Length: 328
Image 1 (cartoon, rainbow, N blue to C red):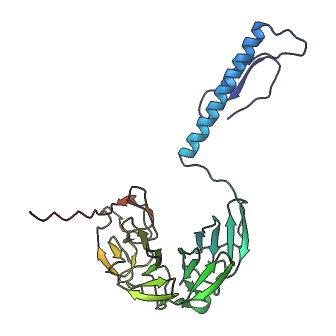
Image 2 (cartoon, rainbow, N blue to C red):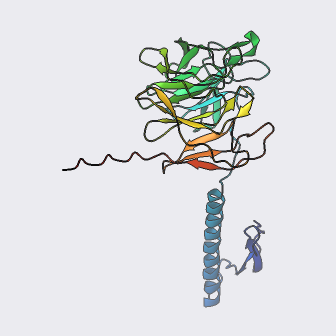
C-alpha cells in the first residue's frame, strides 16, 4: 500500500491495494475562524466518504489475506534449538515442547504460552530422546513413549508422564519393546494405541500395544498386517484408527496399504489402499481427520528416495449399513 503526507488543499493518493490503482482524495482544510460555507462542508463530507471507503478496502484486503492462507509473525524463541522433538497442546492452552536433538540428545522441555508469546523451561525428561511420541491423555497428563538416544545407542522402551500441574516428568511402565518412529493414538476408551516403528536392532515392527493410564502399564494387542515405521495413525469418528502408508523394512519400500484398528476386538484389518497414482506410496506424510469425516493425507516422500511431491488424497470412512429387518 502507499500513503502520502497530509498537505493543505489539493489532491493526494491515500491508499493503493497491491496491484490496484490508487484512491485519490480531493480535500480542503478549514482553519479556525474561517466561515464554513457549503463548498467546504461538501468537501469535508466527500473526504469522510473516501476515508470510509479506505477503511472498507483495508478490511477487505486483510480478510482476503487471511482467507488465502493467513500470515506468519515472529514469536518468542525456544531456549534451545531442537529437531525431532514433540509439541503437545495442553489442556491449559500452553504447548509442551519436549526432547529432540541439538548436537546432543535433549532431556530438556519447555512451555510455550500463546498469551505472552514466550517459552519458559519446565521439568526435564528422565532421559534424552528423539523420534519419540507425546500423547495428551484424558487426565491432562502427557505420555512420552519410546524414541532414540544415540549416546547410548539405544532405541528406548521407557515411557514417562508429564504433569502440567507439577511441571515434572515421572517414569511410568515401559513398552514391551523399544520403538522409534512409531505412532501413539489416544483412543475413546482413554487408552493409547502404540503401533509399529523400529526396534533396538533397527528392524521395523508390525506389533502394537496399549497403554492404560489407570494401571500405568503396556499390554500387547493385535499386530498390523505389515511392518511399518514413519506411518500415520488417525482416530476416526467411528472409534477405529486408520493406519496409512509408512516404510517397509524388507526392501526399504514405501507403502500404499492402509488398515484399521478396532479397539473393541483388538485387531487390525485391511482397508482401501492409497490411490494408485505415480508415487502414491507415502512416508513422513500427515493424515488429518476433517469435520466431514474424511481424512486428508498430504505430502511426504514416496517410491524410492528422493521422492517427487505427492498428490493430496482423502480417505472416506466406510459406512456401517443397518441390517435388514427380519421378514414378517
